[in-house]
Image (cartoon, rainbow, N blue to C red; front, side, top):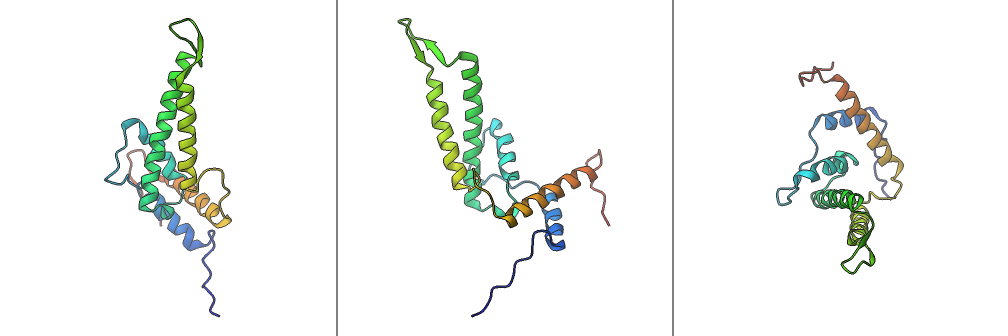
Length: 157
């Protein structure tokens, strides 16, 4: 029985160097056949930063874009609900639930389904994945500290 070669641990020097290289790259782009609205972009950036760069597949990026749109919709609907109140008065003077409450519930269910599809919501990642994500976040933090005010990246020897 042949054994599979061991994968390098996430704290190995090669993984750390790889994480630094990936941290210097721009965030993954939205697939060309998918459209994000202007307000979706901050959610997109948060979503793609939640995983190590090499974990994203083309289909995951599509689902990530759908999740960004959904999260933006949740934020927009919540702001409208906050301004209107959860209970409204209809034309007959009867107190009724604001329909936005149901819209928010539907959006929350959709968000959870998309998170499950991306294996991001409520699961504890394997130790190796967790370490890789931590190393990449640390590399991004170090890179941000090194970049000069004019946006230049000095050569690190």
